[in-house]
Length: 106
Image (tube, rainbow, N blue to C red; front, side):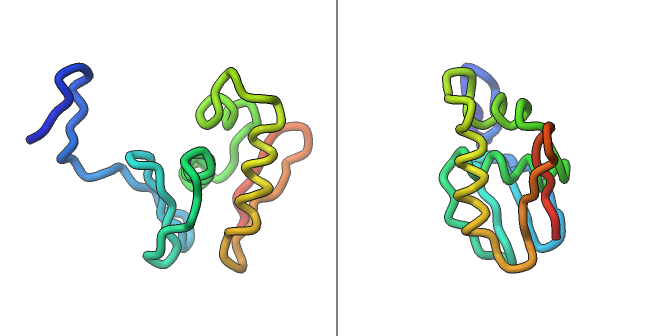
């Protein structure tokens, strides 16, 4: 068993995964798979999509907090979502929930 001497993280433990439809997501390391194929996402995109896979929907504020951090511009989540929409397989989309956030739709 390999653990971090500082935080106790177990490097040998299997990653926690979530499934919604054909998507499988994990946070350590951040990745999202569709049909066993890893989607070509950068870290922030993978974290956002993993959160949407896990919960189905999320507020923009929550996505800003978990993916881009407090120092990013207010439009950082919107830009990441826009980029991800082009990479998602047919039949899977991320829709706006006006005034609140985003919802993963299949």
